Amino acid sequence: MDTGEGAAPVSATASSSPEQLDARDPLAHLRERFIGSESDLVYLDGNSLGRPLRVTASRLAEFVESSWGGRLIRGWDEEWLELPTSIGDRIADVCLGAAPGQTVVADSTTVLLYKLVRAAVALRPGRTEIVLDRDNFPTDRYVAQGVAEECGLRLRWIDVDTSAGVTAEQVAAVVGSDTAVVLLSHVAYRSGWLADVAAVTACAHEAGALTLWDLCHSVGSVPTELDRWGVDLAVGCTYKYLNGGPGAPAFAYVAARLVDELRQPIRGWMGVRDPFAMGPDYEPAPGIRRLLSGTPPVIGMLAVQDMLDVIGEVGIDAVRAKSVALTSAAVAWAAERLPEVRLASPSDPARRGGHLTWTHPAMREVTAALWRRDVLPDYRDPGGLRLGLSPLSTSFAETSAGLDAVRAVLDGRDARAR
Ligand SMILES: *Cc1c(COP(=O)(O)O)cnc(C)c1O
Image 1 (cartoon, rainbow, N blue to C red):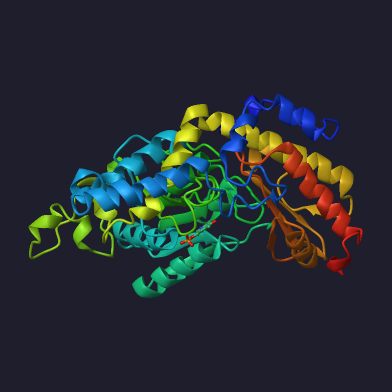
Image 2: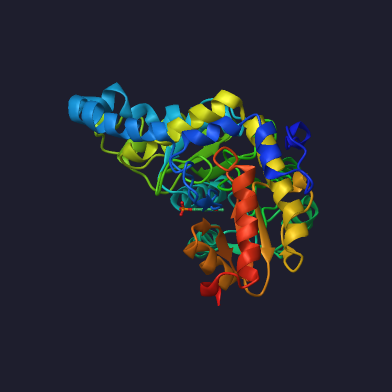
């Protein structure tokens, strides 16, 4: 699998200073395009909510003044109705390795997961199982549980090492003639484990099952080749590494070979062949638009376009190379400066995405103390400090400062930490 690690622009070792690494980073100049990059705040949670780009402020103001305020209802025909597919195609082109016509922006990841798990099950009539892992993100597990209950199916759980993730061998061991769909994350939300999508998809296909990949923690950071890897279905969000803003809608990918057979459960007027015919019966739109239900969330789709422009400018492989360099530096520095913590993420950069977790019994309190000093990582049970190093808005100096702050808090140098 090509994960881009070969192209790392900077060799990140504990012996390189953060300043040297920033000076050699070919993408360093992009950081100042993000609001807040000038402040001393250390932001290590860009994988939960990306920072806004400065141009987004003017895009939003201009939208209210000119598009909404000026075009009014005409805006729908002139531009807005096409945004779900035009922005979908742009995500596909810049990040997903997918040809046009297979990606659409809508709803939230949770709702799109529901639509696609239901659709996958309907595409495999007579098959009775959904395969998934116990450490997937809660929403993925809950949606699968709901669909299983609704459709009378069984869940086939894979137990995983929470410091790693699901392997193709584990999938091969559980899929069979009963499997309708295999639902997994590309990058595990806790450990950062990077699944081998091509190998897992091949295992599922061998058993006649479909795959549904959750790309929330990879899109915009780790490249995918959805078409080449033979992926059937995928979802992802736009507010993490795509910097679309809080509550920005999600996207779904359906392989062209499946889309015209696909039936999704939330039938609405925007997903039909001709919405304005206001016809008596639901007739799904040809192609990927059939995944739509109601009116597209236009305002929510504005900001993501700015991040797609920036990623498109440098290429997703360069973003991945920076990400690998950042996580490698962080792993090396933490080993040196924080000997008492345990890395609960893959040490091989080819097997991890853009975030890292370290465990220590005091991490919950450590995280709270860090937030009080404007260092913002994330906490994940049990005892995990998670650093999300959003490649374009995070510098090596910022990463290093964050680890120094962890050292200071663990040493009790922050009075409020106790
Ligand atoms: C963030 C995330 C989600 C979010 O789903 P929402 O519906 O946007 O709340 C889903 N799955 C994974 C793996 C995530 O990391």
